[in-house]
Image (cartoon, rainbow over the protein chains, first blue to last red):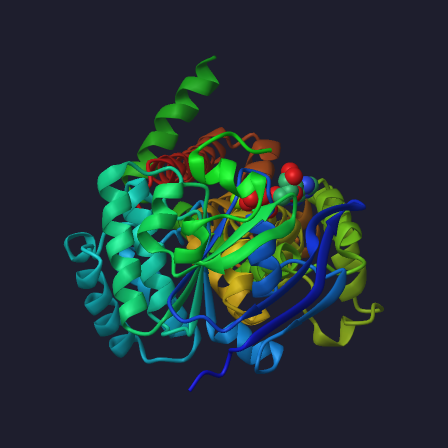
Length: 237
Length: 234
Ligand SMILES: Nc1ncnc2c1ncn2[C@@H]1O[C@H](COP(=O)(O)OP(=O)(O)O)[C@@H](O)[C@H]1O
Ligand SMILES: [Mg+2]
């Protein structure tokens, strides 16, 4: 039973110095699995996800989760494009969301070890997180997001600056999370990643949801010229 | 020249023989400054953390005042504390004037703005880094402050050491409120002033060497801490 979903968004808009970054967006979301927000740089992917997460200001419209705002935020986690590493060891980073929720340190450490093993960071459990490589940091950030067992995790271009192997490892972690029942809302501008991961696709352009379809529908035939061009790999602005 | 040379050799002997008077004065200095520093940190660090994570209307004003107070002449601090603690002052009944407690209070006031300013700068930097994550996690105000204070502990130690350096070498404030009483409130800096005035260069120089040694150790420690911090070895 989901506390968060369905999500209903009506006319949601966020601005920055008078300029509309995102919106108006209408969206109904109750899809299990991975929903991918795809679009060129500057399309508003980051802004839309922050808006849904509640960390960007909603200037107009409504965003309604199935529960109140505070419960909603606590049932979500956000993984940023550039992972935020606490200046602590790997395990203390993993344990942090548990510790601030009042889980005893011992238990938090045990669960941190479990997650470190799952994402292949057990060998650097005691190492300071800020000295890890980019890929390791991103894996740590994802495990730290998953450790509090959120219903939904947002991932903002999680593989944007990573090479092939790290990307594959991260996609495996994400698919495992999906199989375990977590819903994911992931942004990317990499069409290959959309093909590999998406259950549903939101094609974003100039701050608007340009197309909203299941992955198979989207790849079978994008409805708009811009989406067609983007799927083909042409440059879309 | 002869005086100086003689003073130097005598100073050397005072130090290597662990002269009782020298040791007593040095220890009193350390005790007073460490106590003042500890109290100053109890005020300055939470204040700095609050200034880093909270936006309130007077935030900029508070920071500006804090920075201005950093340049506060210790002599003036001493004067104000003297007036407050003197027999006819509001706290005169406590009888604290010319006691180590009065010196601790004065030093604390000198140290707080310095520690708070330096701490606030590093905590703000860290807050910039952490902001998105902690907001996303719905972390409470108190937890934010604790997280920042803990993760910036090296930078905060540097701030505290700077405060120590300012306190231990300070003479104006404690001279006024302590009175430089032998065996009670005489510390390194006030003793140097007195002995120099009397022409007793040997003890003055020995005290000076101890003071310099302390100052150098503090600066080495600060250097070492920021070095390890830059290299990410925490
Ligand atoms: N802090 C900001 N200030 C002003 N403009 C911004 C800011 N953040 C994003 N924008 C603008 O908003 C638009 C959408 O940005 P963003 O959501 O980051 O897109 P994406 O994640 O798809 O690359 C872009 O035109 C970007 O330049
Ligand atoms: Mg982005």
